[in-house]
Image 1 (cartoon, rainbow over the protein chains, first blue to last red):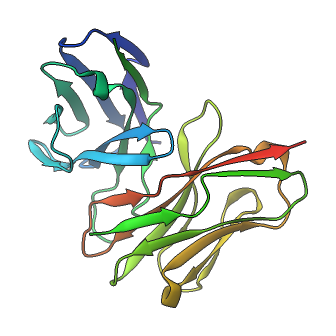
Image 2 (cartoon, rainbow over the protein chains, first blue to last red; image 1 turned 135 degrees about the vertical axis):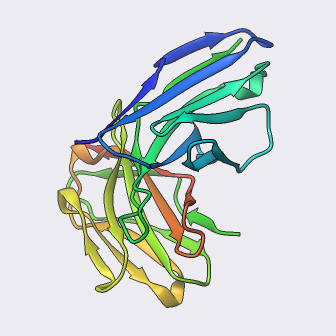
Image 3 (cartoon, helix red, strand yellow; image 1 turned 90 degrees about the vertical axis):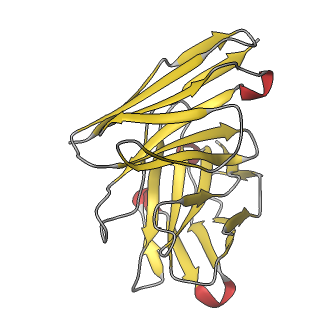
Length: 115
Length: 114
């Protein structure tokens, strides 16, 4: 069976500090990977998605970046955090095979507080 | 661009009441439609999905949703809610030609009074 991991679960960082959130998926290969930010009353905002190693699509121009160094690893980063980067970050995966189900499977999330 | 609109941000019901959560999307082509649910302290998980065929789809825990193409709607229903249905519900759309992106609505927080 497939599982998705995110860490850390919670993080408190000062403004201007760097950020690295990691997401890994087990039990599948060549998944599509996604980073979302969830804010109260605003639903899930798609930040980045990736269809393969080194392939990143950005949906929202901002202070964040993403990388996919391995097939089942997806990293969300920032060089200098802003207060507005606070939020709940969710990683998700979906089967990458055309015609397969497009449902997404979500990780437990990371609660980031920038102080 | 695709968008998803959920009509109610907060809903409060008593147990055994009927539930209907509205969802409308904007996209003229073929779509896949989803409802996800996030119970307190749990991961976001799939409640039900529509790909093709019968526009009335049934999901887990007695939920169902009806796809009405002419209205660009995919409303979620349950005839009799339980306290355990307290959660946040998200409607989502994946445009077939878009492929990789799934767009989510703002969510509806449902609180069921025991």
